[in-house]
Length: 142
Length: 432
Image 1 (cartoon, rainbow over the protein chains, first blue to last red):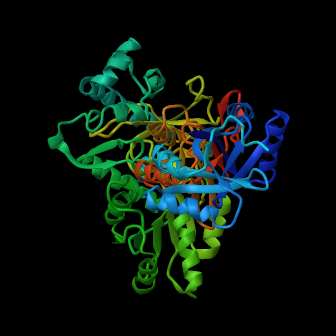
Image 2 (cartoon, each protein chain N blue to C red):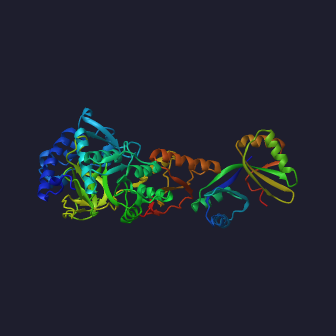
């Protein structure tokens, strides 16, 4: 199942990240995870939030370039070796990854956010082996 | 020395008579040979007989750069191609360059006016003139070249670039006059300094500088660094090339070769002539050219005309250094750049209106063009790799369109200031 990640274009200027956080906070949106990919001039902020559509609308209203990006949220046991197990599956099945990051849902459970080059293939292959793929309906919100 | 005293020191009445006679002939020729201009005259209800003297000049319709571009390549030529012996083209702009053609007589006239300009600058036949303007489609190199030969001085046709060699030839050949852009003159001075070459050890005496805007401050800097007299020369290929006007040794305005190119100053808003001595847009009518005679060409350069007799003895009207443009054209490293060209490159890459800002800076002696582009939705990819690829693509497309390099920076939406709904397109931080 595809999930929606919110991607935001940010210049490398002080205070910008906080502005995003403020906008989302005021809109009552919870951030479960985020990561920043950056270059010397700009960066891309990637967020997993409780309501992606609402988050994008709120950010656009404040003139941010924001869009939804399809990602796969794969549930994994929060224990040693679990990440390697998942990556081995993807590697063996020939699924290439653009980027990935992770967050923990609770003491026992982690969620891996995967942006594969081929999202359908990733879902099919991972679905065969993996515990559970999450949607963006918010069921991963702590 | 005054090359053509009869013309250059003529009384105002004499000059009026010379101009009137040539203007009447040119209007006839253009009316009969250039359909697009004939149509413009007809729309104003004008026939050639309505132009009886230079006083009637302001009745005539204007010619714009777009008229030359629309006629690409040879539509504005008023003689058969068999009469054209050379073409030049403007330093490439919006896709198509503007092409100009010269007959044998045109080239002779051009040499004459450049020779006059060199004499104004204090150059004489014993001088060794190093022409470091580009040779080729650009009019700078060949224009100065033939004027120098016509004067009888020695020309070193080295063309632009190759700075070490430029300096070596100055040392070995005893160059006394250098002709190049003012920014290149400063660059030469820098390279000399870096290599421990004292300009005093050279024979440089005069510099003929043009093709880009420069200030009195820059003049002082060049003069003190290169130990020469820096003379400003003006020209544009649509009129003839360098030599339309040039400063004399008084350095008090550029004498216009007005027996060939009649200058006017108009208000760029109302398009009406301004009162004598007032600032406005410079307009030229070429009244002796055969290949492309051109009436009331809007140069977009802002200046004023001074009709007093100069202390050098010449009566040719003087134009002051151009203080700006009535359009948004920028001259960067000698290349004409219109913000609209950048816009069309960006438009070609997306479907919606791009928001961008051009920033021009001078770092040392070099003009740097920076382009900020707002990352609107149509540009925004989640992947850094694609954003970097986008930046490279914009850089490449602009470079191949304009012929100059640009630093592209991607910025957030709405970072570029909007004034009355319209974005500000250019910030020019250069101090001339």
